[in-house]
Amino acid sequence: MSHSAAPSSGTRDPGPLSRTDAVIVGGGAFGAWLALDLARRGRRVVLLEREDALCRRASYNNQARVHNGYHYPRSILTGLRSRVNSGRFLTEFADCVDTNFQMYYAVGRRMSNVTSAQFRSFCERIRAPLVPARDEIGNLFDRSTIEEVYKADEWAFDAEALAGRLARELEVERVDVRLGVEARTVERATDGRERLVVRAARRVGGEPSTFAAQWVFNCTYSNINGLLQRSGIEKIALKQELAEMALVQVPPILQQVGVTVMCGPFFSFMPFPPLGLHTFSHVRYTPHHAWQDRDTQVDNQSYFERAPRRSNFTFMQKDTQRYMPIAEHFVQRGSLWELKTILPQSESDDSRPILFKRDVGLPGLTCVLGGKIDNVYDMEREVDQLLAESGAVA
Image (tube, rainbow, N blue to C red; front, side, top):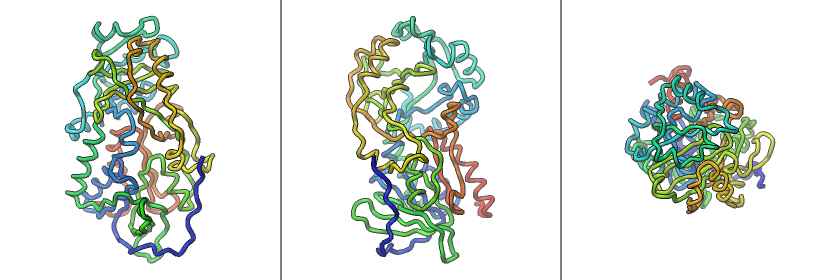
């Protein structure tokens, strides 16, 4: 694995200093949404994204599920928050959501953390619609391994449509978006006018730039600790997984169908709107390698770029056939690869809280991490509180 390089001690010209109210580091869905929120509150915002387009990493390389609560029977709070947030996301981003398929949840007879009765009870508590699947679908499952199959209300977002929508809105709100620019370090300002200085450089060509701001938001997902480490700040406790999401062509009867088996070492597949294929994942085989950020000097970005891509599709498919024999006819068309970042709390109770950790090493530096797309709305109250405490309420 690659190791982090120490911050450069050279005397290279850092480029002209740009002053702004906030610098957002990371142009995924969370960084872009936060930039829009601050801009709409009247703040000057610079958004730095190391890729050449928005939402090209973790916002794209995932199952694209708009969670509606079903996935979290071990965390009532997460289920309830998903129910609230998913309805809002579905309304506000209707042009970015695929609702033209039917989602089904099945419960395994063995190795499941919930029974069918427990799953039904959970869905009733969070008021998530759940009815038995029609025979045409139910008969596709091996009932010696599957206890019950239910029809559910859940959808998929189109990451390409979402990126386009966010880019247009950022332009309308006059957010200064810098693509292909990587933030290298964050440090305390010395002139007393702002709190923080961000030193950045173009990913290709290395042209430097420097930004001074009251607030810096580190929204770089798997690279959160990379920015902290380069800045001489203690890393946050985060787990990383090199994850594979297989892309498959499914038989015609499943073309407009998604399936998730609860709640253990099982599988899930559902439509992936940008490509017209299905994503296919497996709790046991999707993670290829895992590590704790605090316990290693791995540079996550370098590791991701160099890690071998040996697909586990065959293992996923063989195990899935025990529950759905029709999986024999899945045809792999590729894979999505990404680093999946997990909060320690999520490991113990399967919750998906948003991380909005303020003053990380420096006053004004906030680290932001969400585990699912609808977590963007959980940032609102955090931003409200931050602005109120700083005396900068819009």
